[in-house]
Amino acid sequence: MEKNIIISRYNEDVSWVKHLDFKYTIYNKGKDDISEPNIKLPNLGREAQTYLSFIISNYHTLENSYGYCFLQGSPFDHLVTFA
Image (tube, rainbow, N blue to C red; front, side, top):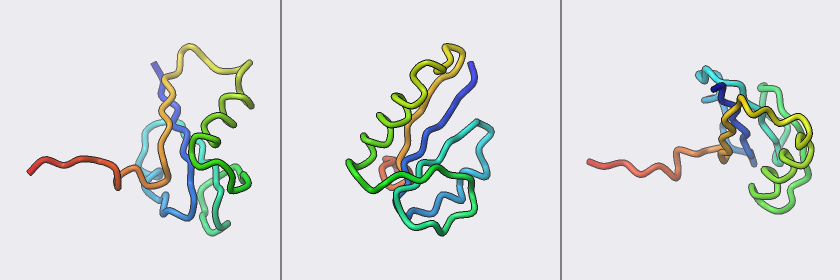
């Protein structure tokens, strides 16, 4: 199964996507200061609105062969590490 990562960005550093081996789409609600390809959205509704926007816009073309993963622009802030 292929993976498709949907990223909701608001001014975070998303340079980490360059290391992904997966297809990704960045939805940018912040500044236009990134070099990665992105889709500009108005800054409304937090990340849930971004994910819903992706689903609605792509509803008829979503692939069953893909696993979709929805992430914030800096998902590492939310990872738990165990020492």
